[in-house]
Image 1 (cartoon, helix red, strand yellow):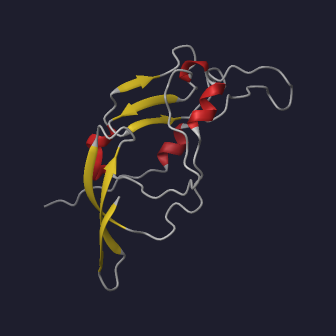
Image 2: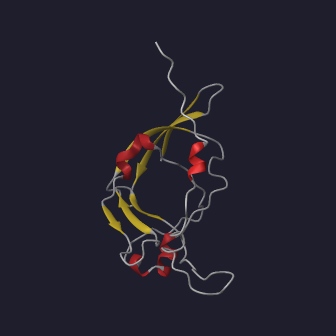
Image 3: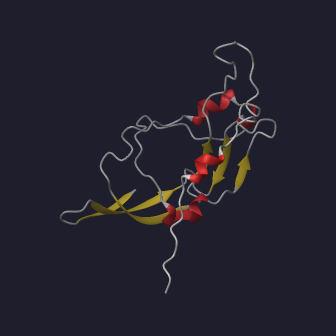
Length: 154
């Protein structure tokens, strides 16, 4: 809900809006700056559909997306309490699967939106993602390029 728009010459618009959960159990008034097309190239994942590919998410009540899936708001750290999880739903059997979070404003999910295919594209063999990077070595020469400036004597 957009309550007010204040136009400041030379700067984007300052807006006051009310964020509400779908069930109206959480409501918060916030002030924000508008930035045109900030999320223009960002897509939205429909977790109400994608959850079907992940058994551990089957009971999570993700909302269905509205017809217009354009991102309207990106929240920052000034509203960090809205990010506090009420409930976390990971997959205890596969740490590479997405994790669902119930926040005060509703459900969200972090992680890949489709099951991983761990077939090696060259051999066609299954690959254990936990063993892919076990033999990585870090050269000591790489760290020698980092120089720490000496402090000047008083």
